[in-house]
Image 1: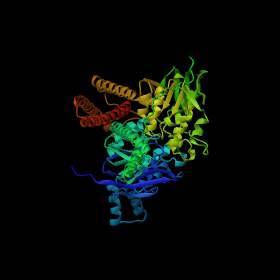
Image 2 (image 1 turned 60 degrees about the vertical axis):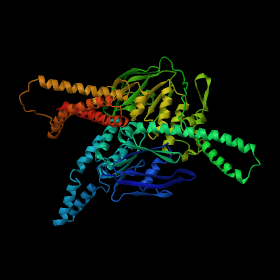
Image 3 (image 1 turned 120 degrees about the vertical axis):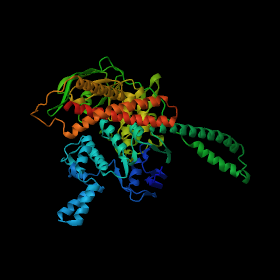
Image 4 (image 1 turned 180 degrees about the horizontal axis):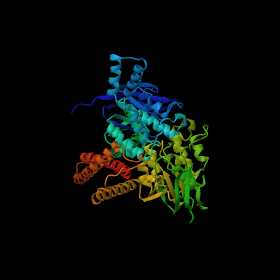
Length: 630
């Protein structure tokens, strides 16, 4: 097997903002074909590190070297798109080989070049697939639910702009792809498509993401930035969790031994105040080292605490035949539901199907177009909105929490103070008196969430609470919400988060319907049920074909736009042949996984099974779509 070349070398990189050092003396490399994720707490400088690597922000010291000839692309958190340009024009901006070939070809035509010069431009278009660039652009944008390519960037929402930037960097197809939170503002189907797309590209990846299933399915190496030290884990997210727990346990044991040793040395130092001789100097120096080691703080995962929310009465929130429309388009209608104590609902659906609109109706912010919403007198809402997190910049962190309350009640009569809740949500005591204007975007989101929880609500409505939060904060939030005894309605593109917290799923806009469909279970169980439905439909369609004699050929007149094109017919026939083979391979992998005892082989089989299951899901959904028109 040929040795993979080193694509990126980072040596001794250091960055400081004012008095705050983000990272120091970072050194690592990325090899060709690796899929590396960087994880760290909010405010640790992940995005800053990516910008420094891509040459968009200078580091204080150190150096970054890409191998000769390596093209890299960067999806940034902060977008720099021309508001006057159209979506399509934006995709033609860049230096990818296809874009350069198109520019050269158009230039050759405009200058009236002939002979060898025109032939070279023509050959470059062939070599870099410039002829079908727009077709590929439309395909990617279609998957990202962007269909009108003449729209101006200035007219798009923040999420749409983000998806245009993602399409741009995917179309460039660089050798080395740097992605900063690529799943933000994508719905669940888009994330599944992006996973499959990245897997098929074979591009070297360095990314920051809080999506743990994405980490599990895409990454093969994880770098953790913890206390300005970089730890490398050669495996996916499951492997990272296992090895990180081992590392922290070992660090805890080392610290405890150092503390025990320090006590003995401290007794010696205090017992011999006059023994400051040359003979004892080495022991005193060693004591200083031990003291420093013992003083290291191992930040443990927060303990479970059970908050007592305000009491809920018998009437909570009732939806009676609720309807919501946008212009002339009906988002949903006929929704009737009476919430019960402790109910946990996840809302899913493509962007634009009305998830946020439904939340607004539940909260009483908007009125339904038909039907009514009745809210019980004892309900205390806590609403986490996507656009929240605006603060007085002159406040300190603790001021923002105490502005709501000084404490919240716990079971057994205890209280949790504002300072204690800040500690629990990973704001160490040293940050409590830091000015809010110095916080990162993720830290502001975390503080916004804390202010909501300090109101001690009994009905939480969370609209994309996982955006911009690191995986460590997410685990804290999940633990808090698992202990929460009130009602919970959540919209999130984080499948891991949904799986842990919801007990049934409402699906909006499913198969173009205006009814809200209720699936029992979490998000993964919903996907499994949808997959099972697709299989049954596939089997019924196949049985119908076998039992029904072929009709005589007749000319079909009318609207031909809904019929399958020749290319789609070929795709449909291919899917019918491929699906049984994919399902057979899945059965083989499941059987092999049950029989396997070797950990590495089990991990490899599990990864292949995960990718294959996702491939089958996508194929079945596409087969259903085509079969309805076939």
